[in-house]
Length: 131
Image (cartoon, rainbow, N blue to C red; front, side, top):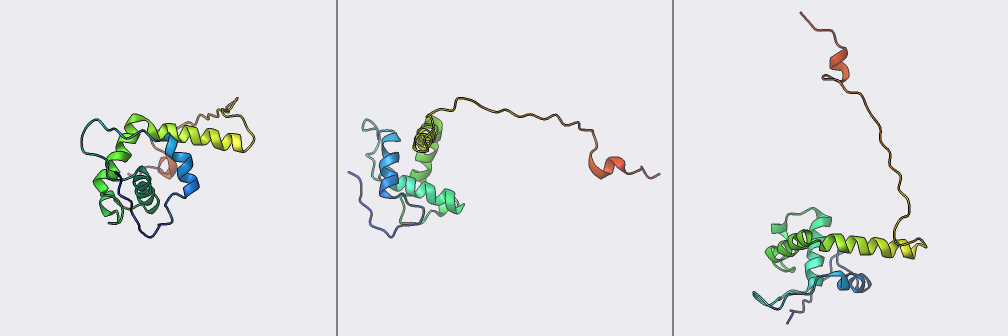
């Protein structure tokens, strides 16, 4: 059973509406192995968003969030198993549809430019050598 946390919300916390959108995109917690999950995915996400928004270190996560090791483990696991990419792709499709566009783009624009470079660049290459 997940522990219900009652704490003052941070500005980076998910709103109820945001949570309803993201919750179905998260992997189902495993019940087969290891210790039972104590912290909710919502609190894990709130902690991840706090660290990312504030630029703080994982180890400096405030104590009213789950332990930093738990938060970092889930963040890393979701990066490895593609959860973040799936969330990003699903949210991008939802935003496109909400703005009246098709889920996937039909065209792309590629731009490339060749720039000549030299071994020495900038002012140094134009300065005469001193003898």
